[in-house]
Picture 1 (tube, rainbow, N blue to C red):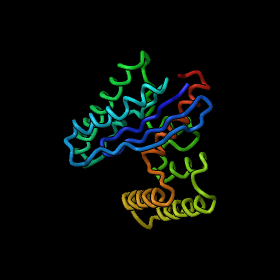
Picture 2 (cartoon, rainbow, N blue to C red):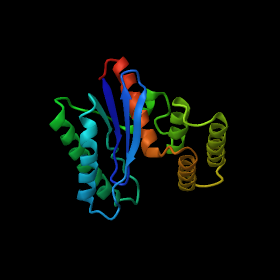
Picture 3 (cartoon, one colour):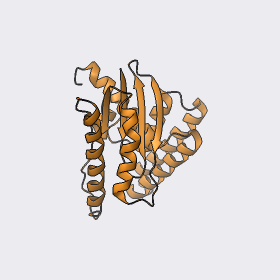
Picture 4 (cartoon, rainbow, N blue to C red):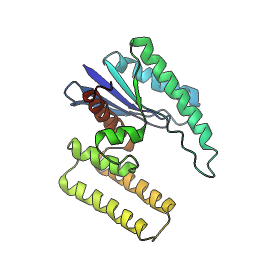
Length: 204
């Protein structure tokens, strides 16, 4: 048995493949040329995944989180594009396998994996780096200290939540530069963990 876990985005998709013992066989990102029209980005991603789908038996995809943010009506376009990508990927999966893929929202996957549902990307990267030994203890201590400092300053009211989120994104980018683990790959790895925990509970 092999499982493929997908964190979908037309900017950069995270892909992880696990064996039946929850060991990561492969992890990578799919990054379409930013100059391509959106539908050709979708085609590029689907074409890349097609050969991988033939090598695996099960699939989990991060579901779309339809949150509403004040003043962010432009997100509707992003949701629509992600929905088209998700539909195209799932259709390709169903063309190859007679099995419906599992869809978990990020919050659900995080809770199943054993971390906070509302944690930030940098926190997910630290969790994954520790779980799969992708960073040294010294590196992890540095990353976690940076995150703790930002959280403390937010609690103390030293800056707004928007500024805090910006700083956390900067930490995420820093982590990727240090250990070559982007938020897309870390999300796909976490999805894989959640699938195995759900399987233990008889949910998949």
